[in-house]
Image (cartoon, rainbow, N blue to C red; front, side, top):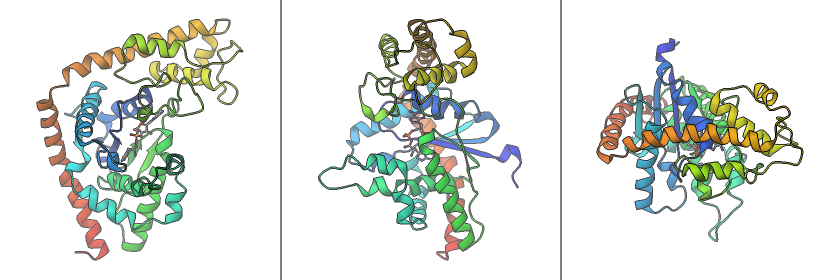
Length: 332
Ligand code: TYM
């Protein structure tokens, strides 16, 4: 049994576009507020970014942007091991091993796969889209992770990771720690402001319904003020009947820490205009602070030094776990 100080927390983000408010509220914030309580790892999931063809120069920039954004959001490299996934080669081999523990049916049932494979190109569905969940399992299992803070859309992948760890341990002997998912009670699925039945996605590109952490603050305000709502004019949380307003309530609650009930009470008798202004103030305040810090972390030499040190530390643990798995499998 691990004591609390040895417990491990890990999360990652795919560098597939600029980070959004959803990425922050659903995952990064929950990581940052807990980083001191765990042995913490955060990485840029760049191998996950090549599941579909990608411009290499653009990918390099996206990786650095993602690291700078982690730091601007409060990730502290003194407390947390920050690294690039592809710098630790063990991810690839472990991903391969975990893919071979997985059934086709399990991967076919993954909601993200079902959603993303709806837009099929002329060559059919990319295999990367199908097999990336076991690579994500490898990312998690390599570090003996106990807790994985993610948004709701990634919960199923962490649950698959538990199943794969259990399956492997049963077949080959105790090798992997079984991780738990951490889903924040509010903010775990931030929706598109213009289409509040769809998730806010960083890969959507410029979009009036998506708030990017690097958006100009005037634009952020405009996006919130023109968010789709309903004709009722009552600030009430009801995801089925009032998805737009419920999404804005979740954003306000997750940004400020105020409870949904308290927000509902405070806005009894007030119109949507006033409510939206408060949401815009809170979000602009948050994003403004992140942007100020982001300026300080843009130096590529500083980022490189953090990534080099992070990869060195990550590699030691990853190599140990991979070695254990290879011995268990009879590969060594
Ligand atoms: P990615 O890059 O799609 O998203 C990064 C994190 O942000 C969360 N998220 C959201 N949360 C709330 N509302 C939203 N609209 C929203 N959009 C995104 C995601 O749930 C995620 O936590 N496969 C992963 C990256 C990954 C990973 C890992 C994560 C690779 N290996 C190991 C954890 C552990 C992904 O594509 O996340």
